[in-house]
Figure 1 (spheres, rainbow, N blue to C red):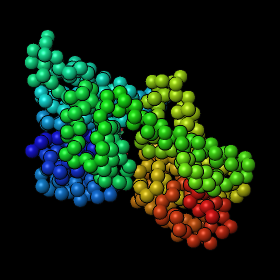
Figure 2: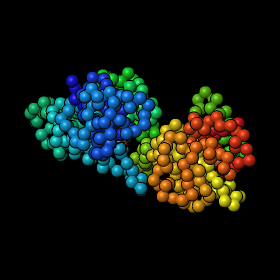
Figure 3: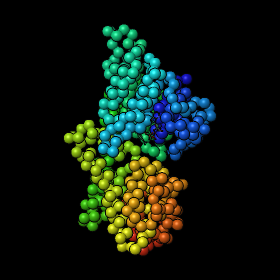
Figure 4: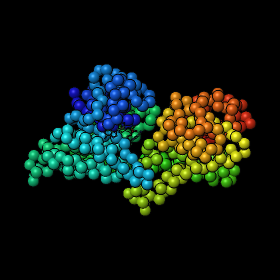
Length: 421
Ligand SMILES: NC(=O)c1ccc[n+]([C@@H]2O[C@H](COP(=O)([O-])OP(=O)(O)OC[C@H]3O[C@@H](n4cnc5c(N)ncnc54)[C@H](O)[C@@H]3O)[C@@H](O)[C@H]2O)c1
């Protein structure tokens, strides 16, 4: 049975490890977080994702998946640790570097290393350099192994490819199998080896290219979404100026067969879109003016929403403000880079009023809010009758069909256009 070592058991690595373990592979999952390793070995995923609990439980029970703190020798190593940006929006690849250092002693000739993490252009080449430094006995080059002057290079060759992950949280397991994949080999043979691996469990297209193109393709995808949302946000300012309903405007514009404007909102959140465009901006600042402008427009959106709430709250003596939703997107409790959370935090810090938070996907408030006064986690039925202002921040299904009579005589700020008539 082919042995796969997956490094990083988060939103990407754990579903992938579970899927592989249920598709005939022997999977050794690695995470440097002791709690995560213990939770997985007890059969429970540490993240919420549709279908993941049963997949992980089955794989652990039948012994095809084991979680550990350290890698072991394997046939294929998959890197799914995070890439980060610093406060100054510079790339931080420390987790990837640590992961490479941890697998280096276990590499043997013929191994395939796949980097699934989204990275700046040139990172796969950097990884090849790190590995070559750490393991001078192995051959890893952008060029095919030469017959001479390095005798035996072919037998000592290892393979490296970047295959950026494109799944959508909420439907990760389906998309892991069905999405088309971009495979950028550090050389032709590496790409082909990676394609042969994915062919065993992916039904989507497997598209071969070079590593740099694969890296930039993923960054371009997320920048496209960021720019499109920034356009929608900018249109909402323009519509406000003319007294036009932006939601109706976009609905009508999108009836054009070649127009697809995204929706405005309280800002852009999540682990990926808030980070990935900065990898392009950092490396090509003069060439990425639209990408930078989009990042700034979307980042400033939370200040705009907070200012609107403050303006409306000023009409009340001691306003009770119901905030509906905290997560970064609908129907999840994922708070990573959530604009809703940022808005609520800012308003509470500025003591704008009493806050009732409704977040059906959380059992408790996050620590950054519990440290603050004037805030309670309540359900929708408790929040609405007491509230002077109702701020819809996340378009969870639970908020779609509320009785509009409950909003009568309240100031409503609907940042998602969910309740537009
Ligand atoms: N989450 C998504 O929706 C998504 C979608 C597409 C691509 N990606 C890419 O995948 C990357 C990983 O995303 P994620 O959401 O799975 O992150 P995550 O934070 O959920 O999981 C990463 C895991 O890696 C572990 N880790 C960090 N350094 C490690 C090391 N040196 N050795 C072992 N384990 C280590 C962490 O403890 C964590 O559990 C992202 O940075 C992004 O580039 C994510």
